Image 1 (cartoon, one colour):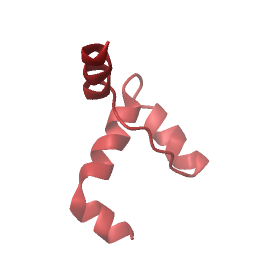
Image 2 (cartoon, rainbow, N blue to C red):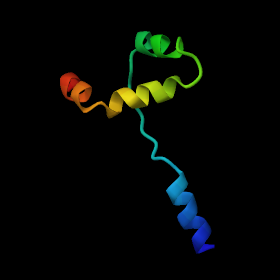
Image 3 (cartoon, rainbow, N blue to C red):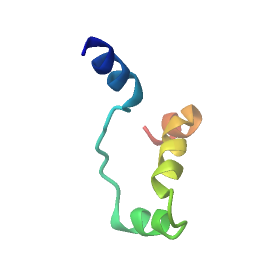
Image 4 (spheres, helix red, strand yellow):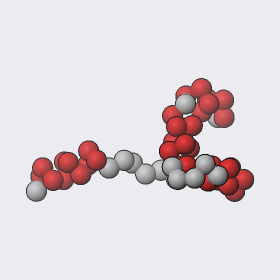
Length: 53
């Protein structure tokens, strides 16, 4: 059982919530399936995050 719990913790990604405007969400969804990955990559860009903060 302990192995199963450890394995589950290693497979799951943390969940976060972001507030984005409806216009940005609409633009992101235009890319189709995987648009959340696109948003995730934008957040991973340190330069972009620093510029927006």
